[in-house]
Length: 78
Image (cartoon, rainbow, N blue to C red; front, side, top):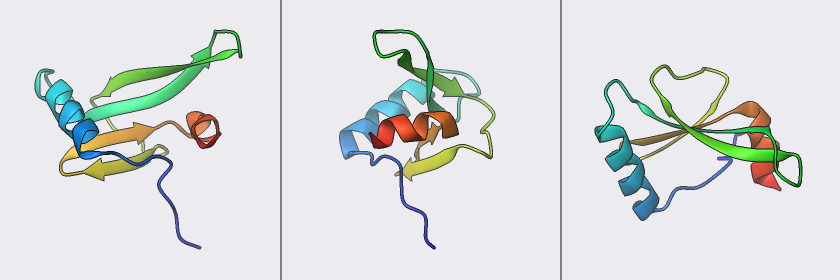
């Protein structure tokens, strides 16, 4: 069974990810995650990635790297 991307990245989003990563030493991409908080009990987090986690989903577009934490994937899927 093939895998599918948890999210898609537009050209503009890829441009912005590359801009953010270019200004930070040792950054390889960004990571989407979740933490407890907010009205629904969860909040999204966005962090810089210096060491990719092999368990994360990896989305790449034109050199922009986004990693999605496994626990965040179900929330992103809705």
